[in-house]
Length: 111
Length: 114
Image 1: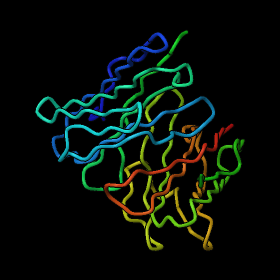
Image 2 (image 1 turned 30 degrees about the vertical axis):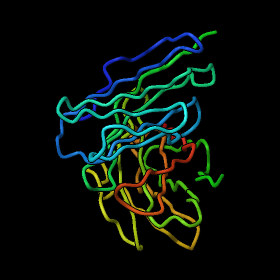
Image 3 (image 1 turned 60 degrees about the vertical axis):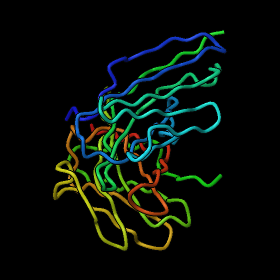
Image 4 (image 1 turned 90 degrees about the vertical axis):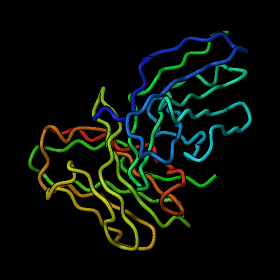
């Protein structure tokens, strides 16, 4: 099941700079997209979401962009902080409660 | 901030034994979910539960699995006869409504089948 793909397994960014995490999907029927952050030994923590009727949603340092024609979404974190170091998952759903997750991108923010 | 809590954090069980994983969802939430993550793989949906019945389940959720809300606060996942391949992190989640609403996850139970 490769409906949601995160092609970059890892990303390293300097503190204060922008982190951009990418996610691609194949199912054009997805109508809701989410980003989760996960620290080791913890569950996924909800960060931000976007419905398919929008192309941008912003919450503080986090902004999610949705490009439906390209079936692509991205998460921008600016400015990046060392505490943002974690694994980031994108997830999507198709008018159901079932979330389909990507494989995750490990973000490391260094001083 | 309200949390989803899961117990135990780690469960070790002999193959063929029954195991029950427990979850206390966020108190005003009405929709409940189980997901699992096998080591090195994606988080996978197992089942969703609303109004005391399963609303959706995946192919993974076969007859060996069952869910129950035995009282007003707990939500359980039972695996009747565990197999080696059931070893995984099991995450419980809840949301206050279904559909376009974020699901909030617990910290998981690591299930190890010997």
